[in-house]
Image (cartoon, rainbow, N blue to C red):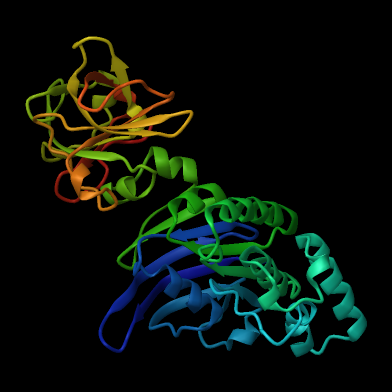
Length: 374
Protein backbone atom coordinates (compact mmCIF):
# COMPACT_ATOMS: atom_id res chain seq x y z
CA UNK A 1 0.00 0.00 0.00
CA UNK A 2 1.10 3.58 -0.48
CA UNK A 3 0.62 7.27 0.26
CA UNK A 4 0.44 9.25 -3.00
CA UNK A 5 1.08 13.00 -2.94
CA UNK A 6 0.72 15.67 -5.62
CA UNK A 7 2.73 18.78 -4.76
CA UNK A 8 1.90 21.75 -7.02
CA UNK A 9 1.83 19.48 -10.07
CA UNK A 10 1.13 21.15 -13.42
CA UNK A 11 0.95 19.80 -16.95
CA UNK A 12 1.45 21.98 -20.03
CA UNK A 13 1.24 20.43 -23.47
CA UNK A 14 3.41 21.60 -26.37
CA UNK A 15 0.53 23.44 -28.06
CA UNK A 16 0.10 25.63 -24.96
CA UNK A 17 -2.88 23.93 -23.32
CA UNK A 18 -2.55 23.64 -19.54
CA UNK A 19 -4.21 20.39 -18.44
CA UNK A 20 -3.47 20.73 -14.71
CA UNK A 21 -2.84 23.85 -12.62
CA UNK A 22 -0.73 23.37 -9.44
CA UNK A 23 -2.55 20.23 -8.40
CA UNK A 24 -2.16 19.67 -4.61
CA UNK A 25 -3.53 16.47 -3.09
CA UNK A 26 -2.61 13.73 -0.61
CA UNK A 27 -4.14 10.25 -1.01
CA UNK A 28 -3.80 8.27 2.19
CA UNK A 29 -2.56 4.71 2.58
CA UNK A 30 -5.35 2.31 1.61
CA UNK A 31 -7.75 5.05 0.51
CA UNK A 32 -10.19 4.74 -2.41
CA UNK A 33 -9.97 8.16 -4.09
CA UNK A 34 -12.15 9.22 -7.01
CA UNK A 35 -11.19 11.81 -9.64
CA UNK A 36 -14.37 13.09 -11.28
CA UNK A 37 -15.22 15.93 -13.62
CA UNK A 38 -16.35 16.74 -17.15
CA UNK A 39 -14.40 15.70 -20.24
CA UNK A 40 -11.10 17.56 -20.55
CA UNK A 41 -10.89 18.53 -16.87
CA UNK A 42 -7.47 16.86 -16.35
CA UNK A 43 -8.46 13.79 -14.32
CA UNK A 44 -6.97 11.19 -16.70
CA UNK A 45 -3.84 13.31 -17.16
CA UNK A 46 -3.32 13.32 -13.37
CA UNK A 47 -3.73 9.54 -13.26
CA UNK A 48 -1.31 8.96 -16.15
CA UNK A 49 1.31 11.13 -14.44
CA UNK A 50 1.17 8.88 -11.36
CA UNK A 51 1.62 5.86 -13.65
CA UNK A 52 4.56 7.49 -15.44
CA UNK A 53 2.76 7.54 -18.78
CA UNK A 54 2.68 11.36 -18.91
CA UNK A 55 5.55 13.72 -18.12
CA UNK A 56 5.17 16.33 -15.37
CA UNK A 57 5.77 19.95 -16.39
CA UNK A 58 6.34 21.20 -12.84
CA UNK A 59 5.84 20.11 -9.23
CA UNK A 60 6.40 16.71 -7.67
CA UNK A 61 4.56 13.41 -7.34
CA UNK A 62 5.65 11.32 -4.34
CA UNK A 63 4.83 7.71 -3.51
CA UNK A 64 5.57 6.90 0.13
CA UNK A 65 7.68 10.05 0.30
CA UNK A 66 9.84 9.21 -2.73
CA UNK A 67 9.75 11.57 -5.70
CA UNK A 68 8.83 9.52 -8.78
CA UNK A 69 8.87 12.25 -11.46
CA UNK A 70 11.68 10.59 -13.39
CA UNK A 71 11.03 6.95 -12.53
CA UNK A 72 10.08 4.64 -15.39
CA UNK A 73 6.52 3.22 -15.18
CA UNK A 74 7.76 -0.28 -14.39
CA UNK A 75 9.73 1.05 -11.41
CA UNK A 76 6.78 2.72 -9.65
CA UNK A 77 5.09 -0.48 -8.43
CA UNK A 78 1.59 0.64 -9.45
CA UNK A 79 -0.91 -1.24 -11.61
CA UNK A 80 -3.23 0.41 -14.11
CA UNK A 81 -6.62 -0.84 -15.31
CA UNK A 82 -7.66 0.73 -18.61
CA UNK A 83 -11.04 1.54 -20.13
CA UNK A 84 -10.46 -0.79 -23.09
CA UNK A 85 -9.16 -3.73 -20.96
CA UNK A 86 -5.85 -3.93 -22.94
CA UNK A 87 -5.80 -7.74 -22.92
CA UNK A 88 -3.55 -9.72 -25.25
CA UNK A 89 -5.97 -11.33 -27.73
CA UNK A 90 -3.70 -14.29 -28.59
CA UNK A 91 -3.21 -15.31 -24.95
CA UNK A 92 -5.50 -17.36 -22.74
CA UNK A 93 -6.96 -15.73 -19.63
CA UNK A 94 -4.46 -17.65 -17.49
CA UNK A 95 -1.58 -16.21 -19.55
CA UNK A 96 -3.01 -12.67 -19.51
CA UNK A 97 -3.19 -12.69 -15.72
CA UNK A 98 0.25 -14.28 -15.38
CA UNK A 99 1.96 -11.89 -17.83
CA UNK A 100 3.23 -9.28 -15.30
CA UNK A 101 4.62 -12.07 -13.08
CA UNK A 102 6.48 -13.56 -16.03
CA UNK A 103 7.98 -10.12 -16.70
CA UNK A 104 9.13 -10.11 -13.07
CA UNK A 105 10.70 -13.55 -13.67
CA UNK A 106 8.72 -15.23 -10.92
CA UNK A 107 8.93 -19.02 -10.64
CA UNK A 108 6.33 -21.24 -12.32
CA UNK A 109 4.97 -22.54 -9.01
CA UNK A 110 4.51 -19.02 -7.59
CA UNK A 111 2.87 -17.82 -10.81
CA UNK A 112 0.43 -20.72 -10.84
CA UNK A 113 -0.48 -20.19 -7.18
CA UNK A 114 -1.03 -16.44 -7.50
CA UNK A 115 -3.07 -16.77 -10.72
CA UNK A 116 -5.27 -19.35 -8.99
CA UNK A 117 -5.75 -17.10 -5.94
CA UNK A 118 -6.70 -14.09 -8.08
CA UNK A 119 -9.04 -16.12 -10.29
CA UNK A 120 -10.81 -17.44 -7.17
CA UNK A 121 -11.05 -13.93 -5.72
CA UNK A 122 -12.71 -12.64 -8.89
CA UNK A 123 -14.80 -15.74 -9.60
CA UNK A 124 -13.21 -16.44 -12.99
CA UNK A 125 -11.65 -19.86 -12.41
CA UNK A 126 -13.81 -21.35 -15.19
CA UNK A 127 -12.48 -18.80 -17.70
CA UNK A 128 -8.76 -19.48 -17.39
CA UNK A 129 -8.53 -21.55 -20.59
CA UNK A 130 -10.49 -19.10 -22.75
CA UNK A 131 -9.24 -16.26 -24.91
CA UNK A 132 -10.51 -12.65 -24.61
CA UNK A 133 -12.72 -12.92 -27.72
CA UNK A 134 -14.72 -15.65 -25.95
CA UNK A 135 -15.53 -13.39 -22.97
CA UNK A 136 -18.26 -10.85 -22.26
CA UNK A 137 -17.37 -7.25 -21.40
CA UNK A 138 -17.78 -7.88 -17.68
CA UNK A 139 -15.60 -10.98 -17.84
CA UNK A 140 -12.88 -9.11 -19.73
CA UNK A 141 -12.90 -6.39 -17.10
CA UNK A 142 -12.47 -8.98 -14.35
CA UNK A 143 -9.49 -10.42 -16.21
CA UNK A 144 -7.97 -6.94 -16.57
CA UNK A 145 -8.44 -6.39 -12.85
CA UNK A 146 -6.93 -9.80 -12.14
CA UNK A 147 -3.82 -8.90 -14.11
CA UNK A 148 -3.45 -5.79 -11.94
CA UNK A 149 -4.18 -7.55 -8.63
CA UNK A 150 -1.79 -10.46 -9.22
CA UNK A 151 1.21 -8.13 -9.06
CA UNK A 152 0.48 -7.12 -5.43
CA UNK A 153 1.17 -3.48 -6.35
CA UNK A 154 1.34 -0.60 -3.92
CA UNK A 155 -1.52 1.18 -5.72
CA UNK A 156 -4.23 0.60 -8.31
CA UNK A 157 -4.88 3.24 -10.97
CA UNK A 158 -8.23 2.81 -12.75
CA UNK A 159 -9.11 4.86 -15.81
CA UNK A 160 -12.91 4.67 -16.37
CA UNK A 161 -12.81 0.85 -16.21
CA UNK A 162 -16.61 0.40 -16.28
CA UNK A 163 -17.55 2.84 -19.04
CA UNK A 164 -17.82 0.14 -21.74
CA UNK A 165 -20.27 -1.98 -19.73
CA UNK A 166 -24.06 -1.80 -19.83
CA UNK A 167 -25.97 -0.24 -16.93
CA UNK A 168 -26.73 -3.49 -15.10
CA UNK A 169 -23.12 -4.71 -15.31
CA UNK A 170 -21.80 -1.33 -14.13
CA UNK A 171 -23.88 -1.61 -10.96
CA UNK A 172 -22.68 -5.18 -10.38
CA UNK A 173 -19.03 -4.26 -10.96
CA UNK A 174 -19.30 -1.24 -8.62
CA UNK A 175 -20.38 -3.60 -5.84
CA UNK A 176 -17.50 -5.94 -6.64
CA UNK A 177 -14.96 -3.11 -6.65
CA UNK A 178 -16.09 -1.98 -3.19
CA UNK A 179 -15.84 -5.57 -1.96
CA UNK A 180 -12.37 -6.01 -3.46
CA UNK A 181 -11.08 -2.78 -1.96
CA UNK A 182 -12.43 -3.73 1.46
CA UNK A 183 -10.65 -7.07 1.20
CA UNK A 184 -7.35 -5.96 -0.34
CA UNK A 185 -7.03 -2.49 1.22
CA UNK A 186 -4.81 -1.21 -1.60
CA UNK A 187 -4.56 2.53 -2.29
CA UNK A 188 -6.73 3.20 -5.34
CA UNK A 189 -7.23 6.17 -7.65
CA UNK A 190 -10.31 5.78 -9.83
CA UNK A 191 -11.09 8.15 -12.71
CA UNK A 192 -14.66 8.62 -13.93
CA UNK A 193 -16.92 11.22 -15.53
CA UNK A 194 -19.95 9.50 -13.97
CA UNK A 195 -20.84 11.26 -10.71
CA UNK A 196 -23.02 8.29 -9.65
CA UNK A 197 -19.92 6.08 -9.73
CA UNK A 198 -18.01 8.75 -7.85
CA UNK A 199 -20.58 8.98 -5.07
CA UNK A 200 -21.05 5.23 -4.63
CA UNK A 201 -17.40 4.12 -4.82
CA UNK A 202 -15.20 6.78 -3.28
CA UNK A 203 -14.18 7.24 0.32
CA UNK A 204 -13.25 10.73 -0.83
CA UNK A 205 -13.97 12.44 -4.14
CA UNK A 206 -11.84 15.03 -5.94
CA UNK A 207 -13.93 17.19 -8.28
CA UNK A 208 -11.96 18.81 -11.10
CA UNK A 209 -12.85 21.45 -13.67
CA UNK A 210 -10.53 22.97 -16.26
CA UNK A 211 -7.46 21.46 -14.63
CA UNK A 212 -8.18 22.79 -11.14
CA UNK A 213 -9.40 21.06 -7.99
CA UNK A 214 -12.83 22.38 -7.05
CA UNK A 215 -13.41 20.33 -3.88
CA UNK A 216 -12.09 17.25 -2.09
CA UNK A 217 -14.50 15.65 0.37
CA UNK A 218 -16.37 12.47 1.31
CA UNK A 219 -19.41 11.91 -0.94
CA UNK A 220 -22.02 12.92 1.64
CA UNK A 221 -20.26 16.21 2.45
CA UNK A 222 -19.76 16.91 -1.25
CA UNK A 223 -23.48 16.54 -1.88
CA UNK A 224 -24.70 18.44 1.18
CA UNK A 225 -22.13 21.26 1.26
CA UNK A 226 -20.68 21.96 -2.21
CA UNK A 227 -17.92 24.53 -2.01
CA UNK A 228 -19.00 26.36 -5.16
CA UNK A 229 -21.74 26.52 -7.78
CA UNK A 230 -19.85 24.26 -10.19
CA UNK A 231 -19.74 21.39 -7.70
CA UNK A 232 -23.37 22.03 -6.77
CA UNK A 233 -24.43 21.74 -10.39
CA UNK A 234 -22.17 18.81 -11.25
CA UNK A 235 -22.78 16.53 -8.27
CA UNK A 236 -26.25 15.05 -7.95
CA UNK A 237 -28.62 13.45 -10.43
CA UNK A 238 -30.63 15.47 -11.25
CA UNK A 239 -28.28 18.31 -10.23
CA UNK A 240 -29.03 21.07 -7.77
CA UNK A 241 -31.33 23.82 -9.02
CA UNK A 242 -29.47 27.14 -9.20
CA UNK A 243 -31.49 30.38 -9.21
CA UNK A 244 -30.40 34.00 -9.34
CA UNK A 245 -31.45 35.92 -6.25
CA UNK A 246 -30.70 38.85 -3.99
CA UNK A 247 -30.18 38.83 -0.25
CA UNK A 248 -32.68 40.92 1.70
CA UNK A 249 -33.20 41.40 5.43
CA UNK A 250 -35.63 38.52 5.90
CA UNK A 251 -34.13 36.06 3.43
CA UNK A 252 -33.53 35.98 -0.32
CA UNK A 253 -35.54 37.63 -3.09
CA UNK A 254 -36.02 35.29 -6.06
CA UNK A 255 -37.44 37.91 -8.39
CA UNK A 256 -40.51 39.14 -6.59
CA UNK A 257 -40.90 36.11 -4.36
CA UNK A 258 -39.06 36.41 -1.03
CA UNK A 259 -37.90 33.11 0.39
CA UNK A 260 -37.72 33.60 4.18
CA UNK A 261 -34.60 32.27 5.90
CA UNK A 262 -34.56 31.66 9.65
CA UNK A 263 -32.10 33.60 11.79
CA UNK A 264 -30.00 30.46 12.29
CA UNK A 265 -29.39 30.32 8.53
CA UNK A 266 -28.91 34.07 8.01
CA UNK A 267 -26.29 34.14 10.78
CA UNK A 268 -24.07 31.77 8.75
CA UNK A 269 -24.08 33.85 5.55
CA UNK A 270 -20.65 35.31 4.79
CA UNK A 271 -20.56 39.05 4.02
CA UNK A 272 -20.48 40.18 0.41
CA UNK A 273 -22.56 41.59 -2.42
CA UNK A 274 -26.31 40.94 -2.16
CA UNK A 275 -26.43 39.14 -5.54
CA UNK A 276 -26.32 35.38 -4.99
CA UNK A 277 -26.99 32.08 -6.66
CA UNK A 278 -29.51 30.10 -4.63
CA UNK A 279 -29.01 26.32 -4.60
CA UNK A 280 -31.97 24.01 -4.01
CA UNK A 281 -31.75 20.25 -4.38
CA UNK A 282 -34.80 18.59 -5.99
CA UNK A 283 -35.66 17.10 -2.57
CA UNK A 284 -35.62 20.54 -0.88
CA UNK A 285 -39.29 21.18 -1.68
CA UNK A 286 -42.56 20.20 -0.02
CA UNK A 287 -45.74 20.10 -2.11
CA UNK A 288 -48.66 21.89 -0.46
CA UNK A 289 -52.40 21.66 -1.08
CA UNK A 290 -54.13 24.69 -2.56
CA UNK A 291 -52.24 27.89 -3.34
CA UNK A 292 -50.44 28.55 -0.06
CA UNK A 293 -46.86 27.76 -1.11
CA UNK A 294 -44.08 30.28 -1.67
CA UNK A 295 -43.70 29.00 -5.25
CA UNK A 296 -46.45 28.00 -7.66
CA UNK A 297 -46.46 26.96 -11.30
CA UNK A 298 -47.59 24.39 -13.88
CA UNK A 299 -45.94 21.00 -14.32
CA UNK A 300 -44.23 20.72 -17.72
CA UNK A 301 -42.62 17.27 -17.50
CA UNK A 302 -43.16 14.27 -15.18
CA UNK A 303 -40.60 11.46 -14.79
CA UNK A 304 -42.07 8.44 -13.00
CA UNK A 305 -39.29 6.31 -11.50
CA UNK A 306 -41.30 3.84 -9.50
CA UNK A 307 -40.71 4.75 -5.86
CA UNK A 308 -40.18 8.43 -6.69
CA UNK A 309 -41.14 11.05 -9.25
CA UNK A 310 -39.40 14.10 -10.71
CA UNK A 311 -41.43 17.13 -11.73
CA UNK A 312 -40.22 20.01 -13.90
CA UNK A 313 -42.03 23.32 -13.39
CA UNK A 314 -41.68 26.74 -14.94
CA UNK A 315 -42.46 29.43 -12.36
CA UNK A 316 -42.96 33.06 -13.38
CA UNK A 317 -40.34 35.41 -11.99
CA UNK A 318 -37.73 32.74 -11.21
CA UNK A 319 -34.40 33.12 -13.02
CA UNK A 320 -33.18 29.51 -13.15
CA UNK A 321 -29.58 29.18 -14.28
CA UNK A 322 -29.21 26.80 -17.22
CA UNK A 323 -27.90 23.32 -16.45
CA UNK A 324 -25.76 21.83 -19.21
CA UNK A 325 -27.18 18.30 -18.84
CA UNK A 326 -30.84 19.31 -19.16
CA UNK A 327 -32.62 19.17 -22.53
CA UNK A 328 -33.19 22.54 -24.16
CA UNK A 329 -36.94 22.40 -23.62
CA UNK A 330 -36.36 22.22 -19.84
CA UNK A 331 -34.09 25.27 -19.74
CA UNK A 332 -35.33 27.60 -17.02
CA UNK A 333 -37.42 24.96 -15.29
CA UNK A 334 -37.27 23.93 -11.65
CA UNK A 335 -36.72 20.23 -10.80
CA UNK A 336 -38.66 18.85 -7.82
CA UNK A 337 -38.48 15.34 -6.37
CA UNK A 338 -41.45 13.56 -4.81
CA UNK A 339 -40.74 10.48 -2.71
CA UNK A 340 -43.69 8.61 -4.21
CA UNK A 341 -45.49 8.05 -7.52
CA UNK A 342 -47.82 10.88 -8.52
CA UNK A 343 -51.18 11.25 -10.25
CA UNK A 344 -50.43 14.81 -11.33
CA UNK A 345 -51.03 15.71 -14.97
CA UNK A 346 -49.01 17.85 -17.36
CA UNK A 347 -50.19 21.46 -17.12
CA UNK A 348 -51.54 21.10 -13.59
CA UNK A 349 -50.33 23.84 -11.22
CA UNK A 350 -48.89 22.98 -7.83
CA UNK A 351 -47.70 24.96 -4.79
CA UNK A 352 -44.34 24.41 -3.17
CA UNK A 353 -42.72 25.32 0.12
CA UNK A 354 -38.93 25.27 0.55
CA UNK A 355 -37.11 23.59 3.41
CA UNK A 356 -34.98 26.56 4.57
CA UNK A 357 -32.27 24.41 6.18
CA UNK A 358 -31.54 22.94 2.74
CA UNK A 359 -30.98 26.29 1.02
CA UNK A 360 -27.42 26.85 -0.21
CA UNK A 361 -26.07 30.27 -1.22
CA UNK A 362 -23.24 31.01 -3.66
CA UNK A 363 -21.68 34.33 -4.63
CA UNK A 364 -23.41 35.82 -7.65
CA UNK A 365 -20.11 36.58 -9.41
CA UNK A 366 -17.55 33.99 -8.25
CA UNK A 367 -19.90 31.10 -7.47
CA UNK A 368 -18.07 30.45 -4.18
CA UNK A 369 -20.23 29.29 -1.27
CA UNK A 370 -21.45 32.07 0.98
CA UNK A 371 -23.01 29.78 3.58
CA UNK A 372 -20.97 28.14 6.34
CA UNK A 373 -21.69 24.47 7.02
CA UNK A 374 -23.56 23.59 10.19
